[in-house]
Image (tube, rainbow, N blue to C red; front, top):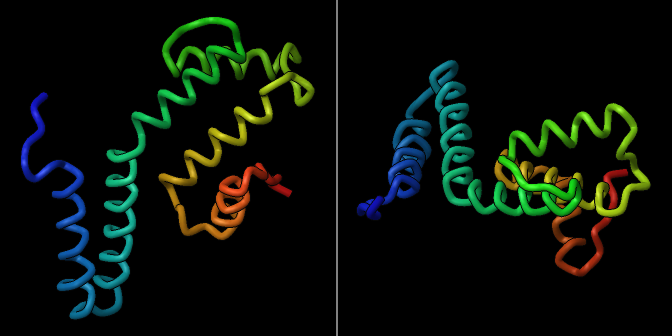
Length: 134
C-alpha cells in the first residue's frame, strides 16, 4: 500500500498531542483521567505501528531457530508453549532464556518504555550486558 501523507503513526501522534496539549489542560476530574487513559492508549498504538512488525519478525526468527521449524508467529508460539509445558524445553535449553528475555523486552518497549525495570535492563543491554529480571 502506498504511503500516504500524513502516515497512520503521524495521525495517531497528532491526536495524542491535541489531547495532551489542548484537552487535558482544560479538563478536570473524570475527563482529565479519561483523557490521560486515551493518550496512553494512543501512544501504545503509535509504538505498535512503528515497532510491531519488526519485533514480530525478530521473534519469529528466534522461534524458528529455537524450535527448528518455520511457521506463523502464532503457530510457533503455540509450539513453544506446548514444548515448555511438556518439559521438552526448559531453562537449560540453549537460547530459550535469551528468546524469552528479548520477547519480553520488545513487548515492554511497546507497552511501557518508561517502566523502570525496562529502562534499567535496556540500558544494560546497550552496554552488552543482558542483565536479569531479578
